[in-house]
Image: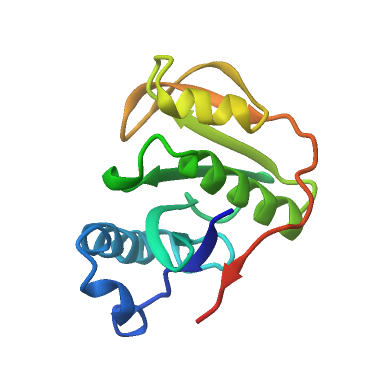
Amino acid sequence: MVDLVQIKETLEENKEFEGHPECHTILRMTLDYYRVIGFNPPWIGYFASLRGKLVGSGGYKGKPVDNKIEIAYGTFPDFANQGIGTSICRELVVLARKTDPEVIITARTLPENGFSSKILQKNNFRQQGIVFDKDDGYVWEWLYEGPDTGDGINISLK
């Protein structure tokens, strides 16, 4: 199981990630995104840690709007195909359900049966159809359909 480590609001609060080669770009993009959507924990970005090693990232595309959130996640290249993306997705679902059991959880992928689609299926998401995303064009939208994932979440508030 991965631990989610918060990406805090400012660069000064995130010095531990600055020197990590896989984190630098994601950190800068996340901080820029906070300036657009706001910093609203727990609806923020996270790095994923496995046994003390950073292995990926994930987060929410902002706080709930109309009781709906969208998750996003990824694994660093050296850790691909090890089930880590599935674990990051699961932890994001657990955190969302623990925070608000009624929130509707969605995700979007390219319209193909790739790794991300398989990760979502393993986490009880069902494809709802094609939607237009202003950043990515036409994508598949996925909806979390349960069951409740429990409360085994591991979040570091360092």
